Length: 281
Length: 301
Image (cartoon, rainbow over all chains, first blue to last red; front, side, top):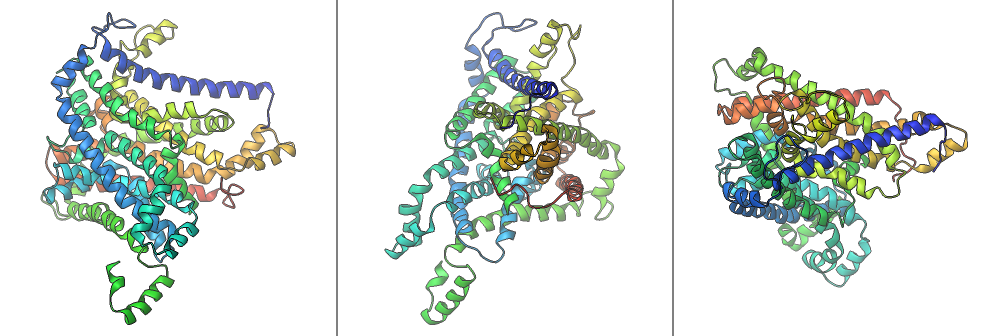
């Protein structure tokens, strides 16, 4: 690349890096305070807690009933993953392989739920779900979470499918494979990395989705992040270290999947894939 | 697909006609998702719109909107939200561009982008809880400032405007940055090299080559960032003063729905929220059109 070696340019570069490093340090410190606090016995007016203990995890597990909450969270998340994979991959295949009238309109239809923030469409959605008596139930939360995840899977999968040579499919067709067989024996093996990446990101998004779950969950369908919100909201009732222990458990349950997902995708693609393909059309 | 197996003669001609227009069994695979989005996203929107016009209070179909715009406790939420969202958006875009311009030259971006994707993934609730500790009077932030002697007493950054502002920056800036980075790396490096060959300085290269190519992408990044920042909710409650300066519009909507159980009013507030977002997005897109609009990036990256 072209280098500019004047003093002004060097100062500017240093300033840009200083701001970036400052930001990254703050992000890491925010995460670190939660972890340190959850491990500390008493932390008042010092740099670090007086002593370290794992007791807060046991008490958080008991006080916030994290066993059932985690079970519900992953039940919801894996249901969302399965359904959005089924709906999203099939739709993405049709969108990638066929040109039909109204395709642009349908693309717009899939983009909207990703562009409108959840809290804006969540309130009318929650109203409708409560009207049909699914609000506050397991399926209400699943339906609400599917709204952004189905379009997300579609937009991630379209470029993945487009890069597979249609001749492979044509060959399978010549040898008499129907659409179903084509999917299971020819496309699936080639698409597995893409599908896996998309679904892992859906898993992360669903576990971390606060707004939609908050608006549609009832007492038995709360996910971990909503319980965490209520715990922080009512802070003062429980020890702050206990809430932090819960926050760490939440962090682990999200980041594990993110780390696995990052083996398949670039971090930039987590935010940019959908929007880039929209900008290109 | 069931349709394609009906009577052979008639069906075949119809099937061929449809296939010529690109509609066959494979195309129909798109239907389940389309029906789903129509039923769970589009229908609730229109349902909410209708509901907002059938208020629980007296005063005809516009009573909810009239109530919103006559009560300062309600209409001031628009201003409070804009006062948070607009500065955060401008700040994020303004910092994202120079940082992305440097990071694109980096060989090992992966570590940085992974760290930046953390706050997006963890979400606003966790960031809010972390910041309550970190920015609090006994937190590391105030401690560090006092250690280097910038301030004498702890700075108050929680339970006010600045707490929400900073938490928005932490969750929104990485999003804007990663989006901008994807646009910046999509621009053909040959264009900048050509400008350099002709003797353009780094500022000239940025101002006359990169920036015009970036404007369409930046406009989209600005809109997406703004829309996200405008929808601020958990951090405004947890880190801000939810009955004072950070009473944002989503708090008003959530209160109408879950405290007063007036879903017609909540829908009306959600509609107002959508309209305000749409207005700002339209303004940004109009402004964008005043700039250069031609063949962008010499070929898609």
